[in-house]
Each structure stands twice: as C-alpha cells, then as structure tokens.
Length: 547
Image (tube, rainbow, N blue to C red; front, side, top):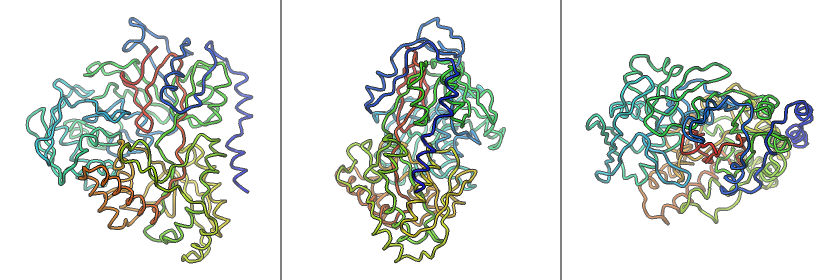
C-alpha cells in the first residue's frame, strides 16, 4: 500500500542526521519539545534562558528592551509574489503582513480587541460605526495617514470590479455597504444589516489592511506590489526570490519591537533549514516539520522547539460546479473513504487531531460539542460510487510541492485509499493554487480570521468568496444561514444556525476537513513569543520579547 511508502518517505531522516553530525552544536542547553498543548507550557518552554546562537551582534542598552537585537532571521517555507495586502490572503501572506501593515484594530488570542491605528471606535446606531484614527501616524514614506486612506483601502477591497484583489478579504467585511469620511481622522462605516461583530471583523488577521491612497495613485498597483509602504513597525528595504529584508520604521507610532531588522529567508530544503537553526543563522522558524523538530530536540542547540494544537485545518476543496467531481454522490464517497485518524496517527505521528466538523473550541459559545465525528466507511463509499456518474475517469489531486507540510505524502495516501472504492486518482503537481484553474480537487488550509464561525467557514466558503465564484454553487440555504448569523444576537439560536450550516457543508461536500496539524515552531532560546495560534505571525513588541 502506498501509505506505508509515503510514511517511510515522510519519516526518513538518515541523510539529515548524518549532515547534522558535522554541524556545530552551539553553547546552550538541549532544546525542549513541549509535549502538552497548553499555552502555559509554551511559555515555560520558551523561557529556558540560554545564550543567543550565531545571530547578529546585539546592542543591549536596555536588556530585553525595544530594538535590543540588531537582526532576527526568520525562515519561511513559502514566498509572496506580491506585497500588496489586498491581492493574496493565504498562508504566505500571514508570515510577514503584520510587520508591515496595520488593520484598524487587532483581535488578540483571547478574543479581545487591541487598538492599532484606531484611537476610538463605537456604534452611532444599529447600522453605523464610527472609527477615529490616532493622530500623527505616517506611512513608511512619510505621508500622513488620513481617513481618506482608510476609505480608499476599504473601497478597493469591498467594491473591486477588476478582479485584482482577493475576494476572501472582502468576505470578512461584506456587511459594509458604504464608507464615509467625516474629517481627516474620522471614518464612518454603513452596514447593509445589523452586524454585532463588525469591530471583530475589522481586527481580522486576513481582513483589510490600510495603504496610502496618495502613494498608490502615484505608483499604481503593480509597482506598489514590489515597493509597498504601510504604517506597521517595519518597512520593506528589499525583496528578492530568496529573501526579504525589513527594518524598523523610525516614525512608527507604537512601542518599538525587540529587533531593529528582520531578515526573511525563503528555505524549502529541510537540510538547509535545520542546519541554519543548529548553527544559529536562523532565529525563528514558524513552520517546522516533525522530523526537523525531532532532530533539533536531540541536538545541543540554541533554539526551543514548541508544539501547540491549532484551529487551522488541512482539507480538500473540490471543483463541485461541474465535471467528474461535480457529482455530489462521488464527493460524498471520496470523503467517506478517507481514514483521517490513520493520517493523523501515522504520517503526522500524533501531531495532528481530527475535529468534529468545521467546528473548533476557539468559537467559544458557538462551538457545537455534540456535532458528529467524520465517518470512515468504505462499504458506504463504494455504494455511493456505484450510484454516481463516475465511470473510471482519472481524478487529478493538485498539490504544490512543499507548500503544506506532508502535503504530498498525505495526497499519495488518500489516492491510495480511494483505490479501495474503485476510484482512479493521481497526484498532479502544480506551480501554484488558484481556484479558477483547479480541475478536480486540491489540498488547502483554513485558519480563523477571528474567533467566530463567521471568521472560519463563512469567510472561506461563504457568499462572495473565490470558492463560490469558481468552484461551488452553494445551496441557497447555506448563504441564507450565513446572513442570519451576521445579525443574530441570541447565542443559542446562532449556534443552531451554525450547526445547520455545517450540516449543509458536510452533505454537499464542496470540501472536507482532514485534520488540524499542530503548530510546530523553533525559536531562539533567549526570546519569549506569545505565538497566536492560527493567526498572523506577529513579531511586534507585545508578542515577541527578549528575556
């Protein structure tokens, strides 16, 4: 069975171990892998003080204070093609966007809101919100931030007719019908319906980031994507196919971060990544493979390795509009034939969990604890295949090599499982994911833009998203429920509306969740990081500190 082959490939580390044997081991104590999933254990793992590794020389006028590290090097496994925050709202974007740009507000890990460029926010009436901006904020080129910039940034995303922006960004704030500039520092937002979580949406991770209207008008969208300016703590100094360099913006309005510079490096080869962490050339890696984590934990290195459970799911998305996967019964069969727990236990070695539906405890009072688990039933799947229009066609499972951890191995294992129900599928490697070009299906990940069902399923699969535009004609009731949830304030009713929404999604199977992989990351031992699981990689002063 190919699953065993995929597993063997995923776990093979002999070459890496041999390579590491020749590497310097550093001077710190052994790295610690957090076995449990509690946030308190994360902090405990991170605060094991040790000398810094081979990173840039530090200036510590105030030990542990702002700008006390000259440079931090961050390794990432995917790379942005465009730095305009409106164009791509995916995993790649989340690794750097919070350093450069600001949303009006920011939603913390505990669901509370933090003020970024907004100074005050309130509802004027049921359909009107007013936001006042902090005075004196400037973009990285010195242009002042005004209410016109906020209106421009929201207008270009919400009311785009060019196809340039990512429709998923608009879906987060799609209750807004009009933006009005009151004065230089005051903006009003009109909504088409009552929206009790409007301010949470404004703080969403993959929401609407503020850009300079004046600068955009001067340079145009294409140039802005390669030479952007924001209001965040770091400005972009350079970008190349291999790296991106950011430096602290001296005019930043908030508390300066711990590092003067951030050096992002694009590294997809595991040997190079592990070597960089062992030698101290890399200080942070937010996406660590299981095999890398095990090797680092066994080495005498200057990094801690931490794993935490997450509400980010890996899943499949089907082209459900037409073609072979346009058949609902076939999609139901394909979902039933996947042994999700086997994938989590073998390929992920237990570093992943299988949720009960598109349903996470991070939803708080809207979590549905009695929602049924995903069924694995080969016999039922075979019956559905026989009832479907499937006639032996080859189904292409599209994968971008290296984009998702274990993505290729999992795809091969699933293709092998589908053989047991008489479905012929193959893994097809592609250069990039694009909903408009997916032929049959592709892997994907869905995180939470804010801790609410509307920040999960609705923002990724709801009305106006790329999925509904290109891949799925959603049942009318699904979209109706989304709009009911937008305005519903009764907790019990809203929870039941979400239960029905999940039932429709699971029955129609435009996609299906596989598992939620743990977040595994490596961090220099003299740093403490309040890692916000499932959110953007935030390296600001409130989140990353020097011990």
